[in-house]
Amino acid sequence: MRKNIVLPVLLVACLAGALLLQPGLASAKKKSGPLVVGTDEAGDWGANVDATLAPIGDGMGQDLVEASITMADAKTVNFVIKLNSLPPSGGLPEISRYNWDVAVDGEAFQMTGGFTDYIRGICNPNVANSCPPPRDPGSSPFFIRQGACNVGAECEEVGLVHATFDSAAGTITIPVGLDVFGAKPGSKIAPAVSSFGPSIYAVPQANVSSPNLPYDALTVTGTFVVPKK
Image: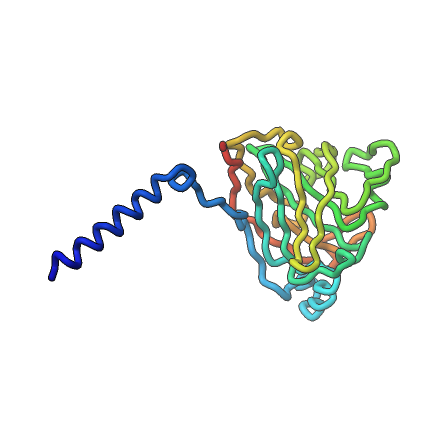
């Protein structure tokens, strides 16, 4: 009786092994998804001023809940900000600003922008009181700055990218080329300190963001390593 049971089991095991050895099956690898590098409690927007203001921030698309990083392709990194909700208008154009500070192989960079940012985008003075020639920043612009922007007069714009605002998913995806960061396979993208403290913040603003206004911030704790293959 035991032999009758063991033989079919061995045949099944051999068949499974043979399938795994077929071209394309043995070498197949599970595609890695986005790396969640930080989370934040929903409903805490404006707690720095008045906790009852939270619904206002949620309506403006500024209630941060998660941050993740993934590769869009071999040369582009996607930085994804997830919100508790995001209106189809992308929050309030010219009012809602999002900021993410990172350290790429120890070098400080800042990504800052919104659904529209024409006030700063046409002639965006950096902290050194200079700006590029007048221009149309386009839809959903995010300005990439290099240097310690949180300590003043130490950073300059090195790139302009256009984010994707997905109201159904409640996400803002910021694509940045590795060349903008001077990054390469194996480079480490770590959290950095912003002018608000935590790496990411969402705040209502006109031209200059102020921590005296109600806002939400998210602390990034994870480090993303650019894949080598």
